[in-house]
Image (tube, rainbow, N blue to C red):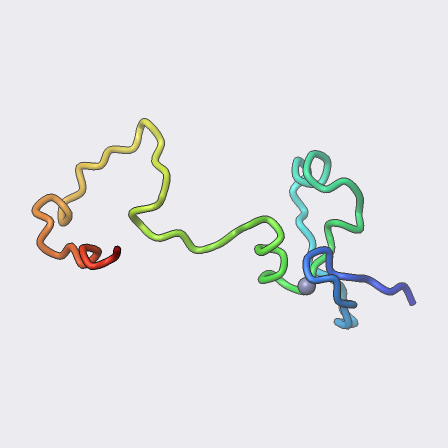
Length: 85
Ligand SMILES: [Zn+2]
């Protein structure tokens, strides 16, 4: 049996069913240098490897065709971010 190691945390992947991989063709060709770098324990490790993470609303980058005429934020009543230094 082949031993497979997680490309993110480096630990041996013990799941007998297999490994977590990215199947997108572009990623496989352009991002991962080899097959070894596209093997992960699970979604969490895979996301960490690609810096996938939860981004808060006011830090989400917007495209030009996205309008910020949000309804609730216009009056700024519920701005709880004021105390963040
Ligand atoms: Zn891992």
